Image (cartoon, rainbow, N blue to C red; front, top):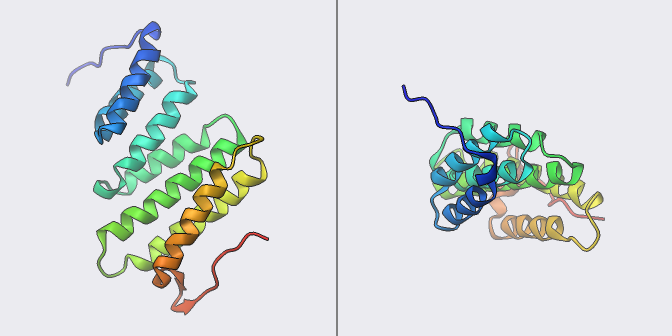
Length: 167
């Protein structure tokens, strides 16, 4: 096996910029590798953790449940309640969308469950959001619209349920 080389802490800002570019180029594995190097050099780097979470969710359509678990582990370590709720919602929403994209029998119920989990997380995030930040509301609405486009996602234990609504 190869021993990984250690990133210098002074190179972290440019490495994170590269990771973001790789995400935008739809190369999540490259972004993940860079973020892992940053976290190895600076385990408390929240920017690297956030970018890694997003890069992991970018690869959900092509990965297994281990990737979801890794993303959830990183979410649990984020520094604020808002971020833990918001990024937890993103993980759940993107898992639901990945399941829907795969199609096939048996995907609808789990996708609906993941989507409901995402909406609950976005509601928690909205309750503790920073001022002038409606990101959680925008994601919640995107989930609600997905339910509207795919009413079969409303199935829970073979029964239709009402969509989750903010009061």
